[in-house]
Each structure stands twice: as C-alpha cells, then as structure tokens.
Length: 93
Image 1 (cartoon, rainbow, N blue to C red):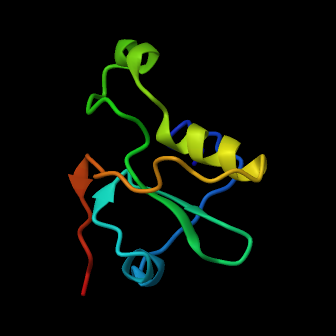
Image 2 (spheres, helix red, strand yellow):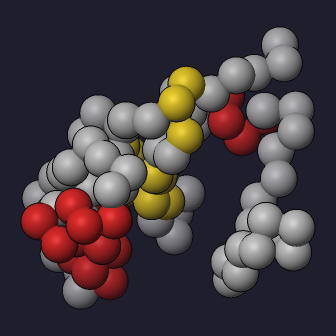
Image 3 (cartoon, rainbow, N blue to C red):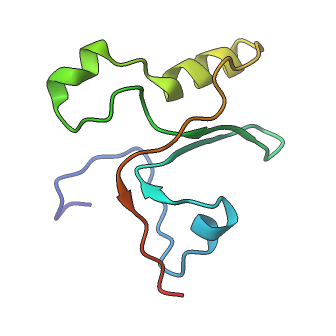
C-alpha cells in the first residue's frame, strides 16, 4: 500500500482468488456489499458512469453509496445489481 501511495481503511489480499471465485468477481473494480448475514446485498459497478475521468464523478449515481445508505437505514436497496465495468479479473486457475 505504501508503494502505491494508497491509504485504504482496509485491504483484502486474495492471491489464490478464493474470494473472487466465491463471489463470482469478473471485473476490477466490482463492488459487492455483503449484509450482516453474509448475503450479497449489492453486486456490480461502483457507479452509473463507465469512466475513469474524475470529472464524471459529479454526474454519476453512486450505486454503492446508495446501497449502503438504504441498508443502514433498514430500507430495501432499490438497485441491487448492475453490470460492473473495468478490466477483467485474471485468475491463476
């Protein structure tokens, strides 16, 4: 993380791809929100705009934020699945 100048609050390393396969991860990034019971509450793209341009963030609907906000408020998640976009995940096996 230091080498990449990243400061996440948490990082999950999955060199064998066990969790990636378990959750059927196909792209990076692919966002998966897991509820306290271990069930998938949201699976898909981080937002509605397929772009890496930071200026597009303002016009995007952040699906992950929407899912977390609804879940924490005890409400149903309106959009619980979208098509993720990004580079494909390359598994060793």
